[in-house]
Length: 72
Image (cartoon, rainbow, N blue to C red):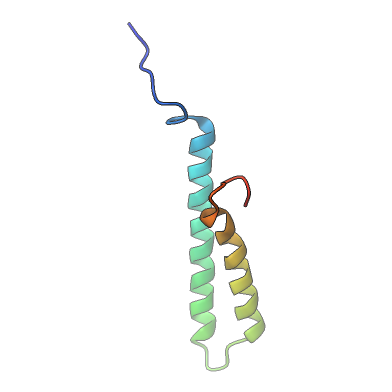
């Protein structure tokens, strides 16, 4: 019986790990979006918390938006 052949990288561990990492990053971005929503809805939002959460989100999005996934 012949083993199926797949295009290079289609089911590679590296590719799967990359997809999992993107999912984790997306979940973290969503967490900080929720934190921002909660903080901004307060009568007196803490500006330092908002700025810090926004900075963390920007850093988390860098690898997702990079044309080179290893450049991050």
